[in-house]
Image 1 (tube, one colour):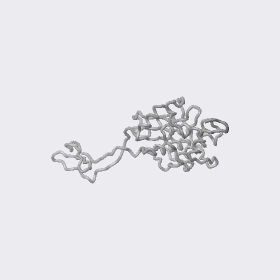
Image 2 (cartoon, one colour):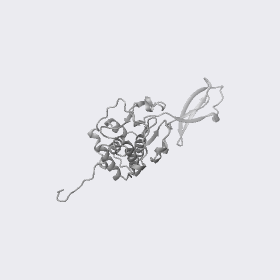
Image 3 (tube, rainbow, N blue to C red):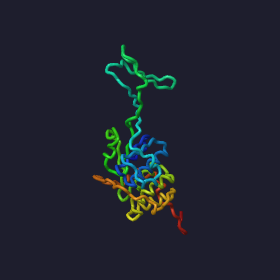
Image 4 (tube, rainbow, N blue to C red):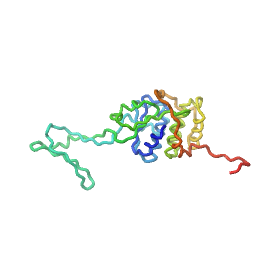
Length: 262
């Protein structure tokens, strides 16, 4: 996680979260947690994956909203066209309505309104975040997305899991997780660390913060991880100091002991 990603997220209203093909439970959990967090700030967020979600992911909040493609932002108006039959296309706005005006050439019949079709396509200035893989190609199934220069990969950090890295990113955006977000991250963390059998100190600290945020810890009910993280050609980086400003909910509570001064 770099300052560039944090800066882009802070200034992006449209975000696409991409899960890799055959995603692991931690990737799904973290992608959904990030999506729910950004929606709390009233952003437009789409979560997509080219693979179907497995039954193990049903415990995760928001899994039903993962789609196989983007709904698109651009309205496309289509109709049958005969060569050299259109003289001019213009538009105007009247009484709050946008009017697209198609003027046929002299001698040609007017456009048949029954043949007009409407659809949506493309992405504009969306920020694309691939969760759980370092390969930008994971987003290649989305038309036009590879032309977007604002593609970032969210992967496990140095001595921290993907769940901990995602929690740190959410905290850096000054977002306080609710119970659903905390539970998703906890389920991802439990799955990723094999019920805390393979864990770092940072992951324990994240787990404690998630419990304080309302997460429930039920290792026996945690989903089993499916798929693997793809970390080819990846060198995890330490979280920049400048991005550690707004992480209050991740900090340990202060403990006072008898005899100690304030």
